[in-house]
Image (cartoon, rainbow, N blue to C red; front, side, top):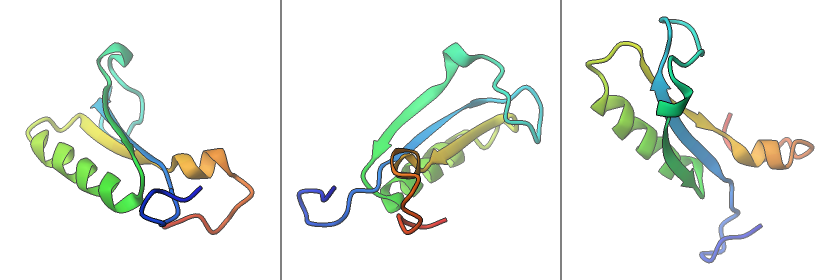
Length: 83
């Protein structure tokens, strides 16, 4: 699963949306979810997450998440990137 640059490809999904209440992970409107994208490594996913989170700082109910897709695709491999 190596990328063109020779580094191991560890896919990450960045998405977000408005939550129904603070401290929850239930979204107010699933049709309005913001799918930022799928990234080849945690570092680029984190940069995208941070930019989106900072841009939505005025809305306390808006949250963005990074999902470690590589862990879902290969759950047996415990050494596939940062926690």
